[in-house]
Length: 202
Image 1 (cartoon, helix red, strand yellow):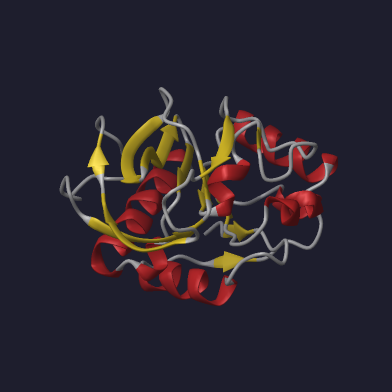
Image 2: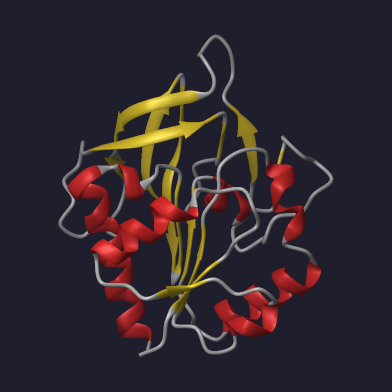
């Protein structure tokens, strides 16, 4: 069985992500260099913290991941990993994202408290593979100061002062701003759904 590549750019709690995926039966490995993505079943980009952390994912990493996506390999971004799927972020304007999705991520505006930490309900905006079996209004756990814009790729939104993309899905490119590995049964269902999407791609 092919394994899922969990990208380590030193900006995420890989332990909790590994536990979440292990709970849904996934086999993960952490590639050290881009060429180690050549035979993966899917790619997961986790992360917390500043967008500058993604600088580790240089041109070679981005090109390799872009090629994998073009070849039909599913991709899931979590928290900062979701933001990295876009063109970039106001948090580090000179640093490019993956550009798999159009748009710039933005700081949650005053007067809301940042970072936004806690449980928020989801507004499911259209049917998606990620949220099969997840009810509209389900609560997920968030911790972040920047957010992705609502675009045609948005499949779930939430509000903390302003509305923003809680989840995106375009083809096999997916992302969630919340932490599914910390969101109880509903979060594990999202990871399980991503595993189903991965199985269909093989």
